[in-house]
Image (cartoon, rainbow, N blue to C red; front, top):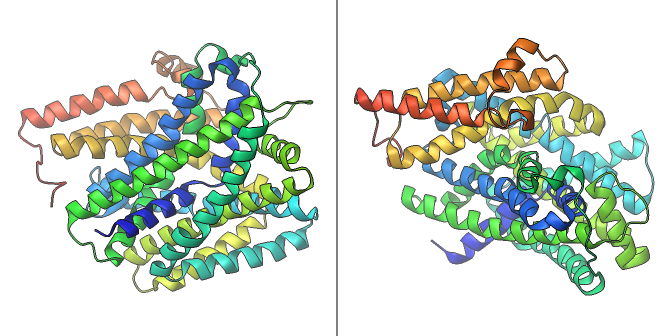
Length: 438
């Protein structure tokens, strides 16, 4: 494996993960956690860095990425779940959300103009650039790894160096959310980035990049993907620590509602007139790299399952869909997609962890099936809760499990039935030992 290619892939993976949501969550966590900053940021990094890294590795361990992981439950489940994941993180949510944020927090911040016409003209230009960067898979890696990611890191470094040399910390109390269980609160903040789902798609982008550079053996693909994931993970950790520290030490003269307002305030305080330009540049670069990665991942997957359309044609389709949905507005996008993401996220995390476990223990069919049945009960309950359609009797039963009130009630029962399913298959000699090493 070429070390330079691994480094470029690591840079590219960092930029794919680091979108607008990742930019906005840490500063707000830093502000709210106050004196409990360290356990809060540790919890955040656990779910915003560690689980996505494990997801990327789990994809490399499977012969056909997310599709193969889902098919361990059932072939139809695997196909439907994979399609839902790619559509939700891609054309119907991830891509238009990133483009909308690039417009509202990037373009508008710099030029201070906002209308339906300017949104349409902006998206034409934004998605034209996305298409040009995505349409050639091999050049995409070079452009992201050699140009866009270094540019993003440069403007972030300017912000961080200025902040570290100019701002001083004054001890502040933690808010109510971070006063009693700061690690869990930070854990949930990282959970809500939804990066574990995106990682299931980005893993294939890295594997395809390695294959394009001549890597063919599975053990080398696993090793290369792991190295790239570690590089991206280190970069994300440094950036999250820096962004959250800025939110922690910044002086607030009036209440703020989110991380975007904190960064606008920070860049304004640190750079005066040029602050909006710096912040807008960071947002535009972060959103653009994420859009390119999601477009590539979605086009690659759908070309694989429907090869009658070329990769380039699928790129055009997803760029066009992204453009049209972006013009509906960010609030509409969030209203449509959020319930779907709330539903699929527990499935994604469970499949990631089971895929990693089975690499060491062997594959158990019942382990997957039992886990998905239990996870589906809690996932449906979460969607009902989102629409305020709680059923008291069901809530009373599910509420006996730990972390239910935090939206993580599925963790303990899923673990129990996964172990039970594995033991039942083990007892009957139905553990497939060679499924992950072919």
